Amino acid sequence: MATGRTHRTATRSRGIPEATVARLPLYLRALTGLSERSVPTVSSEELAAAAGVNSAKLRKDFSYLGSYGTRGVGYDVEYLVYQISRELGLTQDWPVVIVGIGNLGAALANYGGFASRGFRVAALIDADPAMAGKPVAGIPVQHSDDLERIIADNGVSIGVIATPAGAAQPVCDRLVAAGVTSILNFAPTVLTVPDGVDVRKVDLSIELQILAFHEQRKAGEEADAAAAAAEAGAGDTAPVVAAKVRGGSGGRGKGPDGDVPAVMPA
Amino acid sequence: MATGRTHRTATRSRGIPEATVARLPLYLRALTGLSERSVPTVSSEELAAAAGVNSAKLRKDFSYLGSYGTRGVGYDVEYLVYQISRELGLTQDWPVVIVGIGNLGAALANYGGFASRGFRVAALIDADPAMAGKPVAGIPVQHSDDLERIIADNGVSIGVIATPAGAAQPVCDRLVAAGVTSILNFAPTVLTVPDGVDVRKVDLSIELQILAFHEQRKAGEEADAAAAAAEAGAGDTAPVVAAKVRGGSGGRGKGPDGDVPAVMPA
DNA sequence: GCATGTGAACAGATTCACAGCT
DNA sequence: AGCTGTGAATCTGTTCACATGC
Image 1 (cartoon, protein in one colour):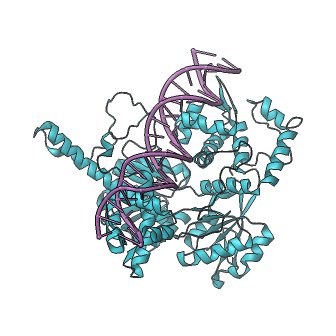
Image 2 (cartoon, rainbow over the protein chains, first blue to last red; image 1 turned 30 degrees about the vertical axis):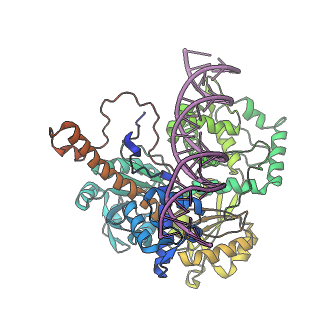
Image 3 (cartoon, rainbow over the protein chains, first blue to last red; image 1 turned 90 degrees about the horizontal axis):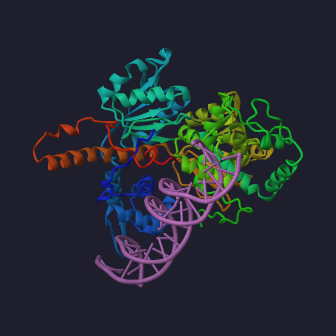
């Protein structure tokens, strides 16, 4: 169903491009590094190198925030740290709940990067009664029956879903109903949420698949030749089936050399 | 200098846009779901809904792969699964090493999504001698002294870094020197790699920071809305509007645009 | 002189809308 | 009639190059 529609008044003055927002945390990290080493100022060139982007992009990004630099000199590190933190909303405290305390959930609970940036793990929630009360990263796991109360009691607006795929949508629905408006989803599922709720997803296997694509490409001539050979072979062997007899059901012939299908999940 | 990717020297007309590549795994997942339920064909509309994108984009994406659909009918599920798998390089087996077996590394080792898509965890490596020999996810952890040998013995070209930030660059250097050409980095550091090596990073705290930005903006918009209402109503109704009114979707005319999930995927 | 900040050119991705095939 | 495949239009993001101000 079409939900849709972004706000129209969007670009008043708070029109920071999404791509820029996604880089602000990167700059912030580089800046905190400099701050810790008591570096007072940086040029766009230096900071860009530390953040792994190019300097023109960095200057453009900063220009959306305002003119916080000094021509001929550079940027004041502490000042920029503050401005970016404020822009990202990190000057306030964000209570977060993590739902699904398996391996990944536990890893997230232990992840130091949260606490150090204004995020506070307010609660860990799991559906397994055996987990209830068990401390993970020093925080006792609570049963999911209490999810709504926990959200309300802690004023949580950001939820992290680290459940198995099947549980993700129901959990998401409950989080949203309870008042959560931002969700970070680690489950390999497309979540459906009402308008006004933001979802970001992190999918480990997707990242690897993208790498595999490039890796295959790199293998270059070899892989290319192999693929070409396989495709050429298609003219008189198995894949013809795939190419012509589609719609067929179950029995798909095995590929050219052994393991064609290969992609069914366990 | 940094990311030096050879331009689209690509092979023949193999110029698949990066944005499209990043979505192929998404389509693949939706398709495997359909395949498991023995659905023989899908329309671009249906598949797009399942993958959480809009149908024009999906058709455009598929057009880069070739003409694998049937006009008036749709796409053959099994055939598409095979084509996308092949394009992503998932019809071959990719041995992967995970370096840094802390909470996160263990979670990754246990993550089912790898094995099910052509990725095989060939080895777990950690710098802590106390970990050596201990099985995680059924695989004995090996000491990092042997990193080079492990890479070579297993023909590994993809490495996953899940170490603390400080160890990431040295580990990366050793992986690359040993022959790894694709790296998935979970450590919160910018890695420097030679040309020809791909790095993708997953940063949990960055994702949360992006959510925080939007969360903050939402709060601001509520205020804006209240202000606008006040302005329009001229002291008519109270700012009660600012209360939690979410998910809205009252009547509103047909939305001209699709159902974009509000935030761009990683 | 030197580095920021920014309009303008460029490149890439998304969406539209319809021609073309089944 | 229905759905794919794709040029054209649009939108978003990046890079260039230089005027601007310390």
